[in-house]
Each structure stands twice: as C-alpha cells, then as structure tokens.
Length: 409
Image (cartoon, rainbow, N blue to C red):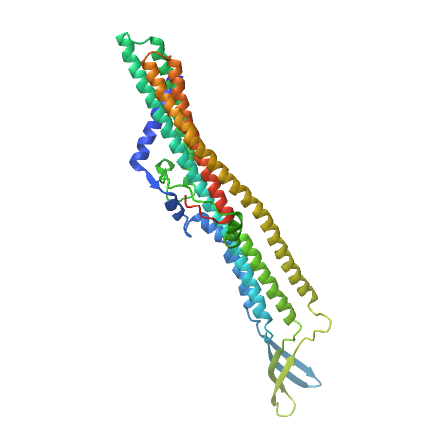
C-alpha cells in the first residue's frame, strides 16, 4: 500500500513539473475572453438567430407578378389574351408584419443572450473550482512537507537516543496519509482542469491549464433587493424577450387591422382577334377583395392573446426572479459572514494550537499524538477555509447571473 501511494505521489509530482514547464496560466477575465463569437459553443448558442431572421425575409418580400395567356376560338374566330397581374401591398400591412417578425428575432436573440451568459457562468464556476482544488493541493502538500520535516527531525533524535522509535514511526505513518491526500487532490485538479478545458478548442492538454488566483481586494457591498431587481430588468434576456414579444403582438394586431383595407391587384395586357384585320387592343383591370365576411377577427384575437401571454409570463418571471434573487442575496451575505468569522477565529486559533503543541512537545510536555493532532487541526482549518471561500464565490457568481449584478470580486 505504501509503495502504491508513493508511486501516485511521484506521478503527481511529475505531472506538476510538466504543468510548470508547459503551463497556460489564465485569469478569469482571460478565460472569459476566450469565449469570443468564434468559440464553437458560442456559435452553437447563437445559431438559431439566423433561422429566426428568415421570418423577417418572408414577411418583407413582395408578391410575384402573374402572367396569363388565354386563347379562345369559336365559329372560326380566335382571340388571344395576354395579361400580367401584380398585387400592390400598399396598405402598410406588410410593414407591420415585418416589424412583428423583427421583434420576434429580437426576442430570440435576448433569450440566447441568457444562454450565453449561462455559458459564461458555467465557465466561471469551473474556474472557481480549479482555483479551489489548486489551493487545496498546495495546502495539503505544505502540510505533508511539514510532517516530513518533523519525521526527519525525529529520525535524527532517535539516532541520537533523544526520541523513541514510536514517535518516528507514528510521524511517518502520518506522512503516508498526507501523501495519499495529495495524490487524491492532484487527481481532483486534473478533473477540474479537464472541465475548464472543455470550454476552449485551443488547449489540447488539460494539464497545461493553470487558474491564476486574483489577490483579494475586499468584498464588494451587496446591493439591496430592489436595486438587484432593477438591474435584472435590463440584464435578464428572458424579461427583454417578453417585451419584444409584446411589441411583436402589437405589430401583428395593427397588421390584422390593415387586412380590412383592400389591396388592389393591377392587371394589364393585350387582346387580339382574327376578325377583320386582326387588330390588337389593350386590357386593363383592377381587382380587390372586399372584406365582407373575413374581417380578420382570428388574427386580431391571436395578437391580443399573444400580448396577454407575454405580459403574464413577464409578471410570473419577475415574481420567481424576485424570490431567486432574495434567496441568493441572503446566501451570499450568510456565506461571507461564516467564511470571515471562521478566518478570524478558527484559522487563527488553529495556528496557535500548532505552535503551542510544537513547543510543548519539544519541552517534553506533550506526546507525539497530541502534536500530530495539532498539525491535523491546523491543516483541516486551512482546507476548510478554502471550501468556505469557494462557497462564497459560487454564490456570488450565481447571484450575478440571476440579477446581472457585477460583484467585482
């Protein structure tokens, strides 16, 4: 078992050497910058916009002209009619239908903005996780090195007859456990690197990727619930999409009203006959549909229903969004409080316990088990602080996505 752990530790060390030699160090801002419009995942999200724009082309196109050639023959007389008919969309209905289609394209784009923001949020989660596992691996490696140093000192003392062999063996056993923890942390780092690499196409080797930690500059004050809701009104694509759908419904309603105005169809052509000298004359007609029975009631009802649907969906989304923002805001404040309190109390006390235990052991007042327990308490406190700090960061990232608030941390 010991040989297996040592091999795993050696492999992790070699992996760390390779990362150091070929590493690609990225800050969170640099990682987000790689999600450019040319990124494959971004292009996949934005692709439906091109499909939606086809409806605008459909609504804005002019009707094609019709050509009619008619031959009539009776009692030896043959007549030819050659006519071209062109509908004239002069009522403005086509313009309103184009406005409605354009508004629906804007609604689609707004919803895709939210999907792109969710992609960026997922990247930030992956980045925060990689930062956390990097910190945890470093802390566990530092704790292991301290234990190795202690085991070396005890070995020298044992050789000089100043320490019992049990103390050395117990310290070496603790080093073995620490080696296993470091190997597990290295595996977790590899998985976090692979997750973050999945957002990029130009990082073939996940072990190259290193998340650069930013120096803490103090937490940003969390805005009030009302300020966050006001920010969400402009930042959330779903709410903007509902507004665009309301605009589309209004334009569709006005287009339905214009359907009651007849749109003329102009027909012009020539007529020839074999009677007499076979003269050729002109033909001119104007056709129009009289809205006697079809008064576009279904179209107007559909536009009104879609407007009501968009308004109801927007109200429901705001209601749900308010609850989400309130919960996430409380979570950010609570997690910050817990992390700060633990940093001030538990982490500081653990360092003091480790120092006191070391002095007491050197003076012969404490056993090796008490000293190792103090080492373990201090290392556990530091790794738990990493977990708490990561929880704060994840809550801030989620609150930023839901409300559009820039935490600035």
